[in-house]
Structures are given as C-alpha cells and as structure tokens.
Length: 190
Image 1 (cartoon, rainbow, N blue to C red):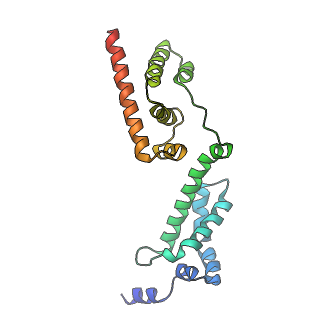
Image 2 (cartoon, helix red, strand yellow):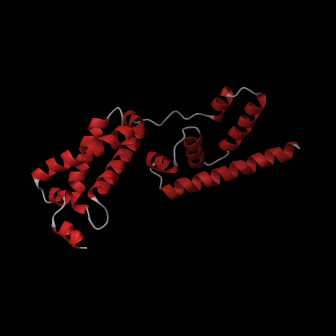
Image 3 (cartoon, rainbow, N blue to C red):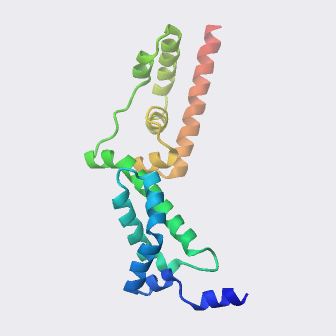
C-alpha cells in the first residue's frame, strides 16, 4: 500500500509526456522503444519504422489519458501500439481503392463459375447468378463485396458509406432471398 502511494505520488513518464516534458519524451522512447519496435515488426514488417513513429506520435497525443490505477505504462503503450498498427493495416487495405477512386472489379458468379471445373459447379453458379440478379441492387452489391472480395461488414460499410446495420440487413435479406430462390428452383426440378 505504501509503495503504491509512493508510485502514484511520482508522476509517470506518460503523465510527464502529457504535461509537455521534452525529457520525458526522450525517456519514454528509450525505455519503451524496443517494446513498440517488436510489436510493430509483427504487424508491419516492411514498414515498421514509419509505424513506430506514428505510434510515438499517438502516444504523445494520448499520454494524458493514461491512468496508472487502470494499467501499467507498458500495458498502456502496448495497447496504443497494437491499436495504431491495426488501424494502419486496415487503412492500407483500403488505400489502393481510395487512391484510384474506383470501385473494385465486381466479379460475377459467371466468372467464378468459369473457374470451376465440373459442369455441376457451373450449373449451380448459374442458378445462384440468376437468384443474385433478382435482388435489389444494394443487396447484390453487399453480397458481391462480401463473397467475391472477402470484405467484412465493417469494410463494406466504410467503402459504400452505408451504416453498418444496413449492410448487415442487406446481407441477411439478400442471402434469405437467394436461399428461397434456390430452394424454389430445386423444388420445380424435382
């Protein structure tokens, strides 16, 4: 208890950074640089140096949020580092599309079916393509982005500007409509 009180009485490095202490910035880089570097190498092996710089800038901006009663400095720094690196990874995935200002090439089920080797696969893909064509355009767009491009609901929401709940609803309703159409096609054949 006495040790905890003494630790809380001495301002942490992050508290000093938050207060604008330039020597604390150097000390935090010296003390936690290896930790940040090792995490950055795992997430951004090719671009770790830039990632580390961004992390320390983010730490400098968010140092005042550090609460020593919640977590240690090392935990706080590791958490900020991990979050920043995840943000960088997500941004990098979207960057080529943002820079080109283009939508990704929308694969059709016919193109996917052409890659299949068996006639049964091609026939099933053709049936699915017909069912997909019957959907509302926004449902079709969401399903194509999810299935052909492997995008998550969050990525689709960011790409299209639709709210996340709307993206999920379009996906659910679209899949339900396709399922009903495919079951209807199968019933007619039997």
